[in-house]
Image (cartoon, rainbow, N blue to C red; front, top):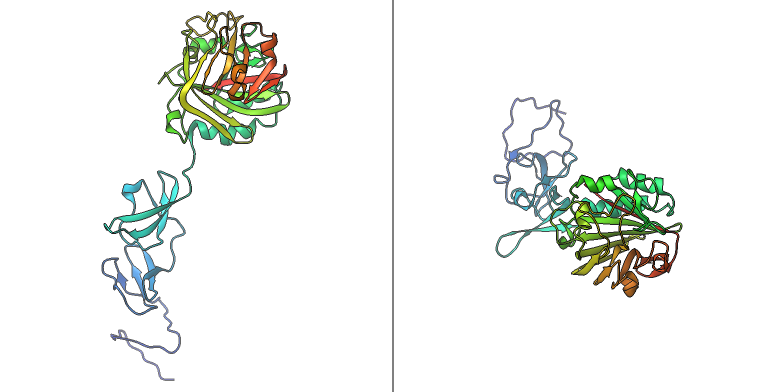
Length: 357
């Protein structure tokens, strides 16, 4: 078979019936998005220097042969790519954490992008639901060490452990708290500002001082409730109890099974006890959190007051979460109930009360 040995061949078309080989590689023509042919024969191969990829013409469009193994990324909508796009081009918006797909332009020649999935959750809500909630599932109400260690290891501060016999009048100070029926007076004294709520889908619930309660009755974990004190943009724990007055709330519950109950209507209020006689640091004295009565928790869409004339948690038990010493003592009749969307007769409960600062 004859051979052709030349340095350069210039031709309009070269047709080979068998393979073409080279000892140093075959260079294909280079184009940009602007200079590549608008249409050509199917199978034509080029190098696109804008995309830094080899492309082949399918007969209707240019298709990429491969990439560097990474997904294209951009920050926010303003920085989405505007050149080299084909319907189906996609990438990751690093600001929203979502995948976005290009779908051409509309009648006004505006780019149309479709977003895949929900944005990733973050902040307080995500930590409570995705991390803390499952971590607390395996304990019972007397497993104080494990429960407190789990909560604190996630960056929170347990400042009270309300339980039958230690709700308010018989609740003394312990710092740090290691058992049930205590509050942490030095933490109240520190006046450390609470890290406000964040990450909730309903933005009304974000940016608010709060405390949460991990609720246990016997060996069962019921979930996490949040008192959000909507009158404040900034507060320490002591501010949630002093001055002694009505405190306006938003309420949120994450049940142990992951279901949620929300009250962002703005009609919930709490009065820990109108005769608590709290000092300016948010407690009565180190041996007695409240001078008289008290309630931990809330009634959604309503009022709750730990002292007469109330109303008390059992006035609307289907919307109440927490425990109370209502106008009595820490072992009296009203203290013998656990509330979690219902009233449950029990003296084997503990609410581990925490926040973040």
